[in-house]
Length: 414
Image (tube, rainbow, N blue to C red; front, side, top):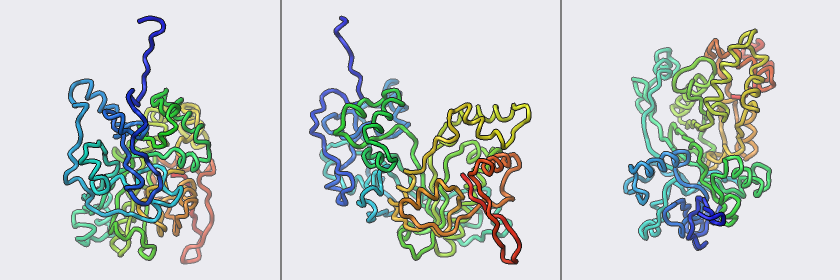
């Protein structure tokens, strides 16, 4: 190869002629809006940056390299349609309401059947199914008399019926930049630079405004009737939860994550049994979006301090390892609520001002905010609680209980 020869590496293969179907973000009519097409095998039809399957796209690429997956494979979407109808809702076409997911992502076979029949490789970014949850905490709630089986929402053995959703991120870059309060060009360049130039189109293809980022999806669990989530007259309980694998799955007692999650689920079951609905939104933001490796490194640093683990240096040790206390931002979180048509949360199992303010800023009303009961806080997690109080994430205010006695209610970052 001569010194003048060069290789161009791009996630948008040579041959694209800019004749791909346009995406008119925010259009109420799916035919006008157009499908999101992230195929890498048909450049002429590709109208997004990135690829489908989020973080799993790397595994798919490795499967192709290993010869396990045909690169030209196209999914058979027969009988994959949602088991519950979601939308359309007015928020789908209200400017700025939804910028991080495709409102029509679950309606591919319904809205774009002609394109699919013509061979266009369009893939769903949202799936909706039904299942039963089995959690020891729900069985315990039954044994202690806090919950009573009804056979409709909650069974005798503690199983709870839910409608569950999986949502892959689909970012409309101009809308996202406006939501974050930054310039679109600055956002595109930052996404390009700080992912090591993973997607050159972020800076070379300004005509492509939709991005399929290589990050995890979110899940949502509906307790009750999905059709009535948009009805403000029907009370709705909710928990917005950011992933914590160690606690949520394996029961680590160093934080309050699983207790708050199961407490929120119990609250949702209660509301559904009372004729309302419950909603749990589960975001993949492990370790305050710093990742589990960073989180475990911080655990070690906290435990090995001469003075032992303590609230005073809780956030300092995180910042020393990660450079920041918390990499999460909640500005995009309300999109799932807009997609579901939700206008009001009557009971919100979170004292996080970050979450509250993000929802309220998007016009979603919030009634009662529910704290985590003291008896559910693990002994080893009390350092976390005290640290959040000391850092101002948790501001206690005195209130009076029904007997006129002083009680404490707080506002915390969970």
